[in-house]
Length: 297
Ligand SMILES: [Zn+2]
Image (cartoon, rainbow, N blue to C red; front, side):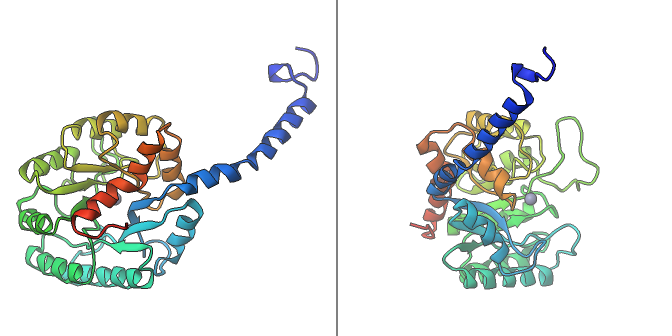
């Protein structure tokens, strides 16, 4: 290579010129973003009141940039809290208020701790009466297939609403992450409960959240009433392709779990057809909402 020449046989100044040209092309992303925004989107897994405490304005700031029209919001009861009925009533009150302030954008999901079965059932009634349309992200206090959940699941079957459950972060076929409580729900637990209640609708949360997503997709392959949300901060290559192959375009739900750019990018860059994008971005979750008469159109 001659002095002053760089990779590809171009001089530094030529590379610089090409870089500038590419940078200018970056301006063409205006049209790319127009295309991204042109798809109607429902974020099936969003949180408010975590990190920045406001009534959803910070969430909508990001949603607006990416053309996310509607969001299913909740405030999960973390492992760190006592997860008492008093705790879950408080966070659900907050969600009701957020929905009230942004009724054109938000629907809400109720959170509870099924260890308190009686209080949870009462709270579900209270929140559904207040307009909530499903569960928010239920956490790790108890497994999704624990018998304490049975009457709760039956209530959501009666109301034709979906149950969303957090899954583990860090689980793999090799070993558990030591911080994960053993009451965390695994893909096998979803298979079990979905088989017990074939008329129920379950949402397996965030395959981009750190779990072994290959294992999740394989295990959930033949559970037609388990929907898989593709939210999360991990941008592993081929995750969407793998999910499309094993779960398919009718059971995948676009969602962000507040990782907006990763989650929109992951779906948009997966080489899907227009009709597949329409299903995953909007129609699949809207069809879930339609069963209880809460659809967006
Ligand atoms: Zn989660």
